[in-house]
Length: 388
Image 1 (cartoon, rainbow, N blue to C red):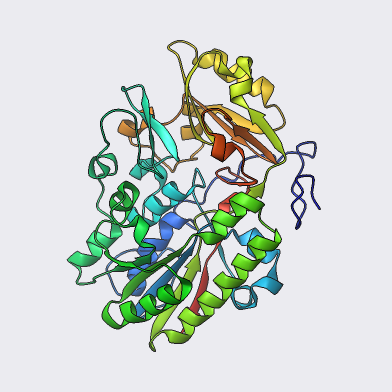
Image 2 (image 1 turned 135 degrees about the vertical axis):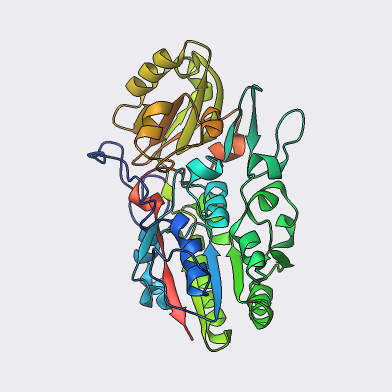
């Protein structure tokens, strides 16, 4: 058992030697941002194939929420099919969160280009925040087409005669996040594993590009921790689902399995809502527990930066907006219109530390598993290729 009461691999403790430097995503060489273009190139579209994927007549991308490469490698017995094909990894991007990675996969660009730089982020100049998962914001609604205006890779496929299909639970159809990152797909609602496997089979008979999503592994990791008995049950389901999809593909097809991020189990929780010191000079707290956007009062950024660096010494990387951008966390460049979405201060825990807000975010503060940071456990995701 770990300190958090979760069975499985012991998490790194805050007292251990911290990572020397953050794992900056390998944008342009081996990141999720490089996957869409490479997949399109494998189908014959005139674009760059950075990952060197082999040609295929049809492609199925199986996106498993929360399936970090280190997590999978730690439990080969629970996922024998996937483990037998684990040969390559990518970096997720920053933050290593679902909306950011979905936008990266949907546009083929790093976060600094598409602007979806966290689960919750400031709407510049308005003093309010948008929650990108729920697509909620106080006051006027936020138009997904305006918030993320870039054409998606799926819209580009249409222009080249490909009609992409997205197989996922019906509850996500038509949501703000889906509209922002999946514009151009034909949505195929499928709830159960059987329905999704059958949905992929039918879609591949009609289309040369299919994406299928599974989110229960991530949900269980949040609730019970990765490595728990319940999480391992979900990993086994994912493994069998991948095997069944591969078995049902037509000849000439390629199945690629990847994830949006990994996960850590938290032990050290720091509650901003119970810390007057951390609240001083802060007007809004965004992001998530492993990648905090800290928005400050006018003239307070330097003082907040110093305070947070002192409090989180040995537990988090704490940098200014300018430092995060210069270090390439969001990509080689950040569009100037997106800069105001980034916190004046970024606080990014490592080890087993998370930064929670128990009153503002009671559900999120009660979780066991978290992600969003720049550690290998959260950044590295598998890229498994199975051909027929």
